[in-house]
Structure formats: C-alpha cells, structure tokens
Image (cartoon, rainbow, N blue to C red):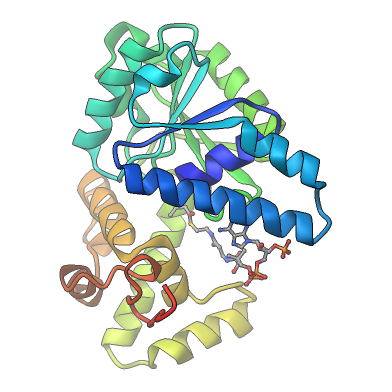
Length: 273
Ligand code: CAA
C-alpha cells in the first residue's frame, strides 16, 4: 500500500520519499510506479511529461535519515502493533513538529500507537487508504484521543489534495471499514468451510447478487489472508466478542503460507504471480 500512497502523492504534485527496510521491496515499488504511469500514458489519461515528472518526484531510501525535513509521514508497515510502535518512536525523532505522523493502519488503535510518542501524540492520526490506492476514492480519517484539531484539519486537506474523499471514523478497532468488511469476509470462509457452497459460487453469488466488484474470497486473497487474519485478531482482542475470531479455514491457509495474490495461492491460484 505504501507504493500506492507514494504514487498517488507524487501524481498530486508532492515530493515523496518511499522508505523501506527491504531493498527488494523498493525495487518492486519502482517497477510498480513505472508500470502504472506507463499504462496511464498509453490510455491517454496523462501525458508522458506528466508521468516523467511524477516519477521524478519519488525518491527511494532504506532509512528515515534520507527523508529528514519531510512535513508528513504515512507509516504503512505490517499490521503488527509492536512493529508500528517501534517505527513511530523512530518517526518522532526523524520528523519533528510540525510534521504530521500518520498511520495507514487498518485496525490498530491510533490512541495506543500515539502513546509511544508521549508529548507528540497530538500530531499522530490515522490516514487509512484502500487498495489499490490510486483507484480507491476513500481515506478513513481517525483521530486518537490526543490528536489535535489542527492535525485533523491538515489531514483532511492533504487527502483532498491527493484527490481522495476523507471521511472521519472514531478510534475503535477496525474503525468502520474493517469492522464491517472483515466479518463479511470471515463469514464467507465459514460458509465455504461448512459446505454451503464452493469458493467460486460464494464469490459469484456476492458479485452478481450484491454488485461487488470482487467476491469476498477473491477480495481476501487480494488484501492478503495474513492481513485479514491479523485484522480479525485485533477485532477479537479489542472488542472481546467471539464472533470476530478468525475462521479455522482462514487460519489454516495462513499457516500453510497460502496468503493470496502475493504468494501466488490463497483461496484461489494465481500462477502468473
Ligand atoms: N494500481 C493502480 N491502478 C490499478 C491497480 C493498481 N494496483 N489495479 C487496477 N488498477 C486500475 C487499472 O489500471 C484500471 O485502470 P484503467 O481503467 O485506466 O485501465 C482500473 O484500475 C480497473 O482495473 P482492471 O480493469 O484491471 O480491473 P477491474 O475493473 O476488475 O478493477 C479493481 C480492479 C479496481 C481492483 C476492482 O476489482 C475493485 O474495485 N475491487 C475491490 C477493491 C477493494 O474492495 N478494495 C478495498 C480492499 S480493503 C482495503 O484496502 C483496506 C484494508 O484495510 C484491508
């Protein structure tokens, strides 16, 4: 998602550093940026000059030092609270006020993350994008307990400047999007496990019957089964309701390393990937 956020920002005229501890991930990001911009030029959505200018606005680096002085950071690491807290402590040092410290978390409490930066909690906010970021219109904006009005106002402005529609949600596990989406996906796994229908039929029924662009099981593969599992665990832990416990079928696929598109196999198979 970080690659999508970086590309969207660059296409909106912002100068961007994409940071990752893994060099191969940065290479994949570069390739994705080039391919997506080339496609937009082919489709005559943008000119070659615009594509080149957008690409030139993105720099790639392995550490936060490279981006010192940036006015805005969007953390988009794995959905693990301890990993995110460690990154937020580094962000606090590398990007002093008035920089905004945003997180693209899809379920973790903003208040909890903000607590690790102490007096800087006012400039922490949730800025939740959706995949694929260049295509999806929404940014869910989540204030933590200490988030200031100024941080919120600036976040709404930035989301609009990136061509997105910012909508506020309160700081409860999963916010609105995943509080509603993930139990539906989990229920699709239960329906499959119980033999209500096969995965293709479940997805076709939801696509044709509810006009979803992707069925829930295809969408789970697209999001990543590990991500869906982690989000369900956060909902289960934070909301304390057994209905949020991940379906055994979902858990088993994750244990088997079948994580969806990114591993070439999840519920369905993606040989080309
Ligand atoms: N990056 C940039 N552009 C992309 C893209 C990507 N990764 N994937 C697709 N696109 C673009 C294509 O280039 C194409 O653009 P053009 O019209 O200019 O050609 C357009 O999107 C449509 O793509 P396709 O024709 O290839 O395929 P499609 O019509 O089936 O659409 C889709 C693909 C947009 C992904 C569509 O299937 C869809 O909307 N799926 C549902 C996605 C969704 O629900 N996302 C939210 C997931 S939840 C989440 O992200 C948050 C979380 O916390 C888990």
